Image (cartoon, rainbow, N blue to C red; front, side, top):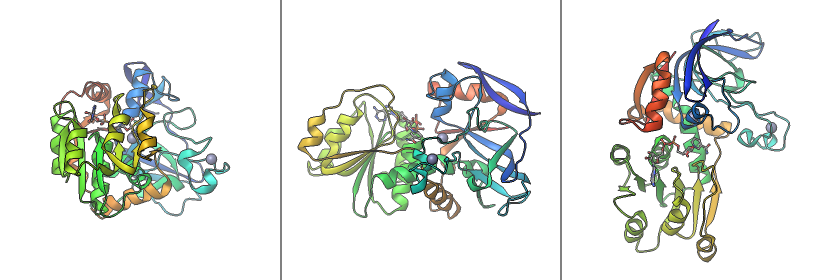
Length: 341
Ligand SMILES: NC(=O)c1ccc[n+]([C@@H]2O[C@H](COP(=O)([O-])OP(=O)(O)OC[C@H]3O[C@@H](n4cnc5c(N)ncnc54)[C@H](O)[C@@H]3O)[C@@H](O)[C@H]2O)c1
Ligand SMILES: [Zn+2]
Ligand SMILES: [Zn+2]
């Protein structure tokens, strides 16, 4: 048996013994050194997740050490330091055929009956989802490959080009990582917004040209004034208040592109005329393709992206419920909370 953090019912996490996972021919068994708490874990915790339902083991972000490999596994051996891309496409559908496992009609993800979550002592993953991380990265930094891959994909969907002016609305984990990816791609002008001073300071420290408090100042007025009333070329939305699409449209130039990575699961009103009048494009961005995950691991490994300051709390497995509550209440200066099973 192995210890796992299980959402037994909404708002209640229990540390339970679950069967040690079996290792099939193509599998890698990994001792989990750290697992990360992400917004989607909060949805499972609250019982509002679309397809992860209690009782379920939390988590999809992790990094750890290989302890055993199946007989067909070639790339890894016991002792290797690794992280895992937490999705497996069916390999059969039209999207998998195009390398778009993120859009697969039948994908397998952790925290569901077909794949246990990562808040466990030992986690099994198919070899194709496992990526080596170098000694120079801590396990917590290695785990950041997952949210960083979300940001890499969002930046790709945003079609950022050298010389673009960019605004990122929301400076939480995803917004800050998108800022780091944009900077690594040589984008000089990135304006960030948030409603928490700690996150705004973080955005400034990580290279934002300006960080705007969206409640104390008007991001539309500020950004339009800094761009000669033209607006920015590209906007990435990484926060979910109900007015955010209209705000994004109002700060984007004509023919500009707005990429929506925030998951706004309730219907919100949108002033569509602004999109027509200004010929703007609104694009969605859903998790990542394997090439984005690979790029995220590369950016971390080369230190082109340094995520060390984003890891703000390290807790034990027993403190998982406390960590989820801290994140839910934004109690304290929080970006990424990690848990050590
Ligand atoms: N598309 C995907 O694949 C994917 C993957 C991960 C997360 N997400 C989504 O991306 C969003 C961001 O995720 P996160 O982990 O960074 O969450 P987060 O809670 O860490 O960040 C959201 C930030 O937005 C800020 N905010 C709140 N109101 C704001 C406003 N009016 N203006 C500007 N900022 C405001 C918050 O203070 C917070 O810092 C969430 O909606 C999440 O569900 C999407
Ligand atoms: Zn995540
Ligand atoms: Zn598929």
